[in-house]
Image (cartoon, rainbow, N blue to C red; front, side):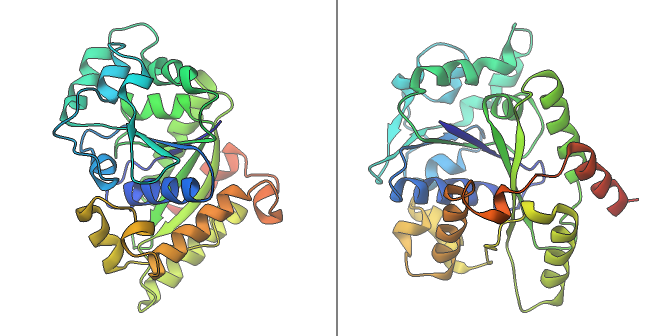
Length: 276
């Protein structure tokens, strides 16, 4: 079971859009996939077509060990895609868990129950570096970092990489950076091209070839509770998310993605040099 956390403490980077659409395409490519919504805003939950206001159980109940993960799972329109949904109840989880032993391992422990059931687990982490994100990073094997093609693209990434380093050192030594996903690209501007070049310079082979454009269809799809694969399968946004999903599936076979990853020190140094 390959477990990937989508993480960036900066909001507005298409993190949830990327998590739910890649989860959908993994399932459509024959991979049994679980989408875990760790964000109290529950945008991944509603974006995949689940009514977040009418949940009997959610990830909140799983983290509090009130129910098993199997009891909280929800089906979706896509046959091989299941979801562990979220809702506003999750806002209280960090406060309720803060004094408990092993609080960072609650999600990892719960997932052991479905270890043989899924090929991929995708975590949509909240735009913060709190206990919910720590649960995602501790349970995950790798991290995909969405970065928007805008002026402050690298802002805050140094802190995120340091957090990943701390998780590696103290909670999850196997955690790696799976890749960097460029999002919200607008090729009408020179800035987009400059940001893409800058990110590729600092992250080398870790940047996915597929770059997600800024499109109306991707913006509209969540309002209909559908991933782009179902809402507008012929759109450029759908094509690009399918493309990056195939990069993930073929990561071990693709030469560019199978080369030696940057060390933690190299990534941190590159980011610190960028921001002085």
